[in-house]
Length: 243
Ligand SMILES: Nc1ncnc2c1ncn2[C@@H]1O[C@H](COP(=O)(O)OP(=O)(O)OP(=O)(O)O)[C@@H](O)[C@H]1O
Ligand SMILES: [Mg+2]
Image (tube, helix red, strand yellow):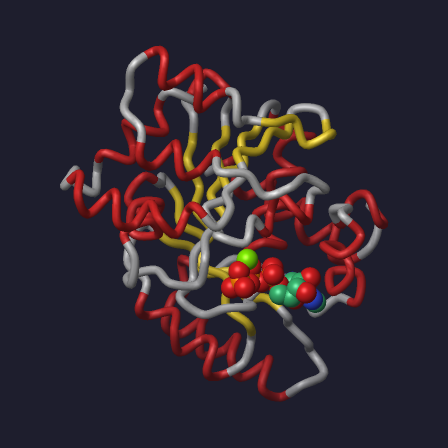
């Protein structure tokens, strides 16, 4: 089985990218073996949510060369998340500086695929959480370029869903914060069905447990593996496994 690179991306902030990256990564690691979660968010959100500190691993990944020595050095920033099979390459504030270095290096945007390929032996899945700025920065453009699948979470509200059209790539749309009790959620799903029919994934509902998971440093499966959100993430992982 060849390694699949998956990127969770949306130019809008707070639409559930980190929740999806971490919970999907955990679910895939339980079902499908080793997963490497790469965290280019300058706040190191995925790392913190999984109980680790932000670290400059992503800066080194984006800016260093491909020699064996450099690869070994970058590998030394890959940490076990404390969950079997789930590893993380954390980012921190230094990821912001990668922008300047990347501009000066003048590498083609497609070089990221080769950069990440050194981790292909790590396991069948590499996931990127991203910051809310696709199209605006070299870092996020590169993660989209590197990916076999781009999952675009969109909150089921008008202004969030409107931003979806701005992301290019091989993408699947994942509605989040879905609340069947509101007309806005239902109308947004109908709108997304019309615009992205074949690319639309089943929604993740607005869940009280998902509001709390990051603060507790536990994924949804560690909070309540039988709850509705956990089942929705498991279903998402099944779809990704078949992709
Ligand atoms: N389906 C959901 N239901 C309820 N709360 C959620 C859901 N998904 C995520 N959250 C919560 O909403 C907040 C924003 O989610 P998250 O941090 O995953 O968004 P993000 O897109 O990564 O944000 P940013 O753009 O800042 O990186 C967090 O407090 C998170 O725990
Ligand atoms: Mg985030």
